[in-house]
Length: 320
Image 1 (tube, rainbow, N blue to C red):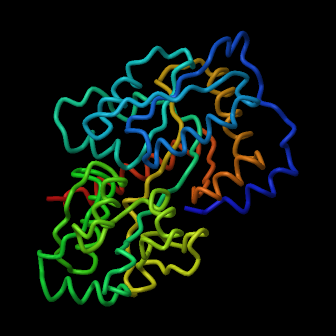
Image 2 (tube, rainbow, N blue to C red):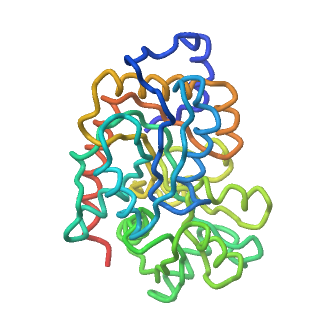
């Protein structure tokens, strides 16, 4: 997946003045964006940042509503069942939404219940320790895990989350045995790390960056093909190990609507988010927040979701 923050700045010179085609009589009222997670997390952060900047391109306000519960299942169910008039959209987070579908019974939605609008962000997982920890690098943590199989506590959002999936792939690829300790989000996981309740934590980059920059948390490595542009000195786990470490836990955050929205309204919504990701102020704010913008239009985003579902199916059996 190609990181686009730098490229987006160049797009400002080409087409930034072209407003999206307006669907007839749309929008006539604010658009609601459902976030299926609690306030303060990575999903909520990117949604609220978009809401601050998108009105000139959307033609109306975008109101963020948090509908947390059951690891995202409550909010995604509400989104799937919402009226398909274009006034209710949501921030879809993959692979989390696919894990819900694959791991649970009686889930009231599937991938086909959503219309892709635009992909917005790629948020890889960081392997972190407390800045005061005696574990000064990845090699030290790996050695401790190998010497105490199943006993080294590593925090992460879970269970059955994208972070848990990344932890399972981490163990499988390197032949390690950790004790994954589930917390209700990256925020609580970071709190546990800062309080020395655990030896390490797997955190989304967007949620960890504030602690890294404040000198409270040390990032040992990132689970992505490339180094994170906000943390250029932090190597990838693949660099550190020489192994092809899959970044299956990377949170892919994109905008979707319920299936069946009129094509003209889909085009208007997609165009608004395309314009947003060419907005200089939004790009700067995203960079400052450590958000890696990875824009894709509706068709390309649909293809990415298909690929992510396939990867999720491959690694989900590793989770205990």
